[in-house]
Image 1 (tube, rainbow, N blue to C red):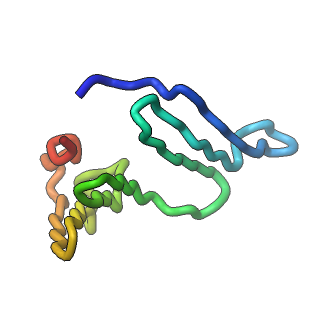
Image 2 (cartoon, rainbow, N blue to C red):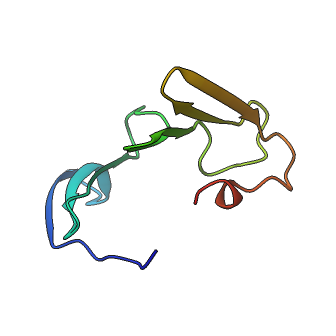
Length: 100
């Protein structure tokens, strides 16, 4: 599958009043194939670390996207009524092998 650049991006954010650093931000990305993505990040708010990818065939959730081998790390795959949870607490487990 080829890499796609978004055809439009709508973004909002807030900077720290004194330091000028990012406090919170979010964006909606639209792609030419009809797919869109939402992203958000924050440095001074607890918004969680979950990555959720939804498609026509199911849902993929990574509860620790930055640390694949962190204790409690899982990959959850939902396909219809079927749900599979894989623990990835071994540092050798990398999420990139699961995303196709």
